[in-house]
Image (cartoon, rainbow, N blue to C red):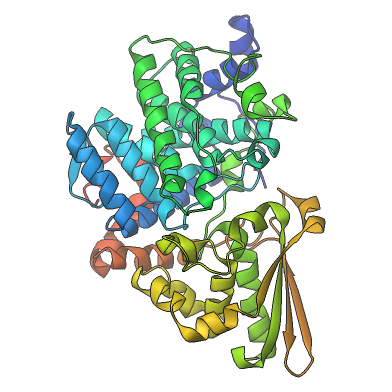
Length: 480
């Protein structure tokens, strides 16, 4: 759902023509380097503020989780200038390491923003890059917003150009394509011109990485992929600022990103609608701490239970039909096996349906508190419900993918009654949005877990939504 507007400020085609080059990589670089707040519709700026709030609430809530603490200890040990803070921890490190830790933490709780078309979580890397480099540079609130929006717009187009083959090959797009988004974001804050921005994109492409090998063991590299993308983008932009060159055709080069990382590619998507159709407006939010592919099933069971008022003991069996791309990630009936920890619960459809059925919406909110997932996971009642659940990959649902991440939930009751509900757009999608009050409630719950007072949370909200008027990013960062 893109907002289409005239673009009176950025005369992109003219600038490329003057440069004598219509390379897609260079076109994106020119767009990113020349973007101004005046060229961005107010609805897009407002959406970016929602995304920033969501990112911050997720990061501060997980700072004490084991993977975060391991990374924080590493960042402390590396050394370097104390120029960018690790959110929620009270100390600073060099900007690339702050981006690594903050980007990784953004993905930990499975509460981050999501983009269907690229199957990615852009905010983890983009906001980590923005805050790390923005603090280092003494940026204003407007600087941060414009930089992040440029990062979203570039990265999501790059991602769509290689989808869905990129994802199906096993690449973790939140790692690969977000190296470009983080580089653009950092490059804006370092005031790169369009030539240097092209170098930054080229060097980001040299570092683009991240795969789904972590799934089997629910390894910590799932989250690291996002942090690595943030760090890689920051390094790429910092190098470009010093005159370090990268290939300015890294996307379309015959040995470049599209050819190596894609399959059936769509190069026209790199620039179509650039500066007029805004990808930021396609972003979604998560209300529940679970992989996004599980959310349609959660919404379905909540709706059916409200409609029919059945209890878990009334249920004979449940079939969760999920598009096959998603089912491969979330079909885990035994999240307690192995050393999966919290990631086991966050990637188990069986577990999340059982929690929704037994404890309702409040139980799902409780999963934001790390003491509840493992408590629920080990509950005999939860496990009894999980035994009744079957996840079925449904090729018919693939027909709508990636525009729809659909699920059909079928419940057979012990009295023979059959219930069914299909969800194409779970809560938080642009077609079924979480409004500002819902995002604020999510923020309050998460920051409370991090020890924030109600007063502090109430003071912080208007700072985020007034960020475009902030002369210094410190007006926001001093809370963090």
